[in-house]
Length: 73
Image (cartoon, helix red, strand yellow):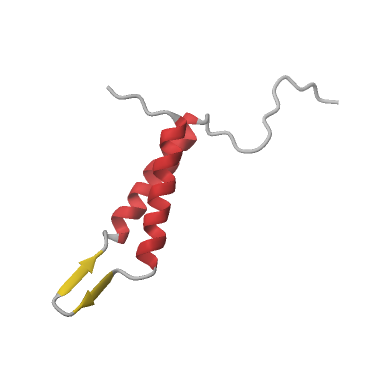
């Protein structure tokens, strides 16, 4: 079973965020008899959600400062 590192998960998240930005500028393009259709925006959103969760899991889900063992005053 492959092991995904935090760096790999962050790289994948960055790629899917870039894909989302590209799709936001236009879903399809046509010129003459040629056409290009970009990926499904809904699928990209699913992948962003997946990689955000993976990054959170691999980073311990921490955001901001973590304080342990503090004594209340």
